[in-house]
Length: 389
Image (cartoon, rainbow, N blue to C red; front, side, top):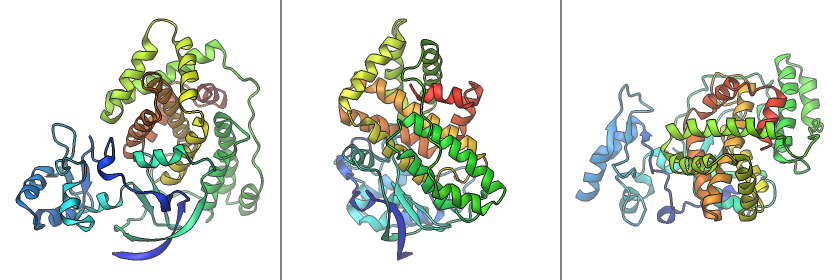
């Protein structure tokens, strides 16, 4: 049902437009697209040309153990592309019958609509058009109230709730502001965030409203590193963890595989991986001189999209922090290696959107937190040694 409502959105949102046929890596590439029972029977019965009907029939498959909300899939073909995609890159269903003919998930993506304590909407980093917007966005992302007319799905109540004393959105935006503090490098911002989360969790668990308001209104204790360059031992361990994390991701994800395998080959050549990493960093900073600002936008947008740290999953907030650290580590490691071999900003966009297709559309966050724990990377010092690479 379409209706006009106010939503809190990032300031780029009014300027976002789908690239349609000009997208290098479309949102329907590699991934089966889950659709509801309502959308399935809508597509089964829709009146269309014989060519489109044949494509629809080839694409639709009822999943094992279907539910009303997740009933079937639009499955990719042997070429990993959606069978509904036509030669010019556009969706054949939309091209012939218009946007209203699309399944709900296809109409909304990459928009993430959140209805709960407040209305929020943002776009996923997995869309290359979003990453491209960030290349030239210099100021910190702001969040504005914006009227949206959306065909909203039926939302179920979250399975998991977190104590926030009614200040959930304020707390989340407070954490985002910490990540936008440009007086600190990103690793130092993350460690400042770590302390802020610990202090806030103590207050909310005690239902100490006065302390919560105090923490929201004051500047957090800033973490500032005591040294500029990691030691050889720290680099060895950090690169080993980042390398292992990427290898595990590469084994399980088609969207990251091409980027991951080439990056792993680059770092696996010879015994001078540390030197090779420093060379790659220097090259990366030449190709993307504003990389830290772009990374800031990607992390902040991811945090807002996922409603960090109160995602709907049964894990402690500390695990969500570890997951954000893993996201940053993997983004940094994969981008630096890939750009060494493919030195253009469009290549960064490609690797970035592929990585966030994995991060935002799988259980990566839960896996990543457990992975770091297995490597005993969960104390403040161990975390910092990893993220400062």
